[in-house]
Length: 292
Image 1: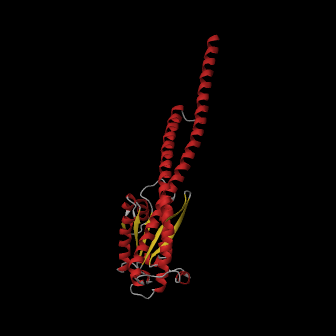
Image 2: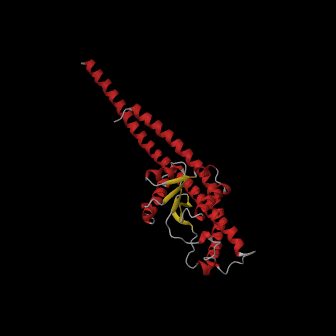
Image 3: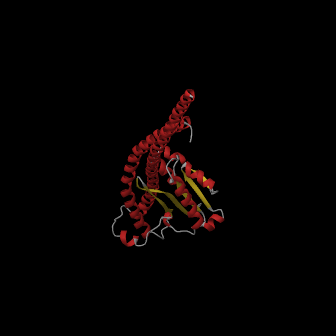
C-alpha cells in the first residue's frame, strides 16, 4: 500500500485537475450556447440558398457561366479538413482526421497514388494528424478560428473557388463534424465543388422561383454567394461541435476525477487507520515488555 504522503500528493493533484476540467466545462458550455445559436440561425438560410442553387444548376448544366456546376474528370483533388486549434475535446479531432484519410484512401485511391490529392487544413490539430498520416498538406487557414466571421471565411472560400475555376483542382471535398447536439457530432463529407444536384432536385425546385433580373445575373451573384455560405455553415457546424465535444469530455473528466477522489480518500483512510493501529500495537507491545 502506498504511503500516506504519496496518497495525499495524489489527492491534491486530482483535486487540481478536477478544478481545471470543471472550469473548462463551464467555459465550453458558455461558448457552445453562442456557437449553437449561430449555426441554428444560418441553417435554414443556407438550406434555402442551396435549394435555389440546385434549381439554377439544373437549368444551366450546359451554360458556360456555370463553371461551378460543370462536372469534370476527377484527376486532382483538394480535401478541406475542418478540425480545431485546441485539443481536450475527446475524439473530435482524431475522428474527423481519420475520416478524411479514409475518404482519400478509398474514394480517391488512384489519385492518391499519383500524388494528386492535397489537403487544406483548417485547425492545427487536424493538420498535425494529417502530417502524421503522411498526407500532403498544401496549406492551412488555422487563423480563421481566431475571428470566425463571414467576411474572413468568405475570403478563404473565394480562394478555394478560384482554385477550382482555374482548373488547379477538379473536385473539392469538405470533411468536418456536423453539430447535432452537445453530446453528438456527425462526421460529414460533402462535395463542395462542383455543385452536386441531388436526384429529383430539378423537378422539386424548378417551378418554385421566378428569377429577376435574369438567370445570368443570378448565376454571377447567387452561386458564388451560396457557396460561400455553405463553406461558412460547415465551419460554424464544426465550431459548435467542437465546443459540444469539449464540454462533454470535460464533464466526463470531472465525473471521473470525482470518482477517483472517493477511491483515493477511502485508500487514504484505510492507510491512516492501519498506521494508527500499528502505532497502538507498538505502544501496547512496549508496555507489556516493560511489565515483564
